[in-house]
Amino acid sequence: MTRYRSVVVEEGGRLNNYAIEPEMYVDSTPRVGFTDYAERLNGRLAMIGFVALIATEALLGTSLISWLQSLGQ
Image (cartoon, rainbow, N blue to C red):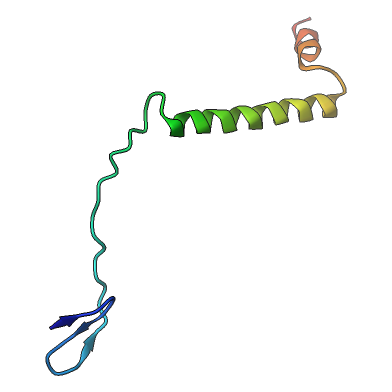
């Protein structure tokens, strides 16, 4: 059998179009602790939170601190 990119050709010249499994690999990049991935994710979530805070203050017409103080009274 001759192996090409995604098909196998038998001795008779017939093509077998069955799936060929990809090569396996192990991603050894750490996903916990102070990694670049974690810092980037935390920064993006902080930016989303800050924009949500600004939008909430704009919709309520008051600051978040004064709104929370009015809830406690």
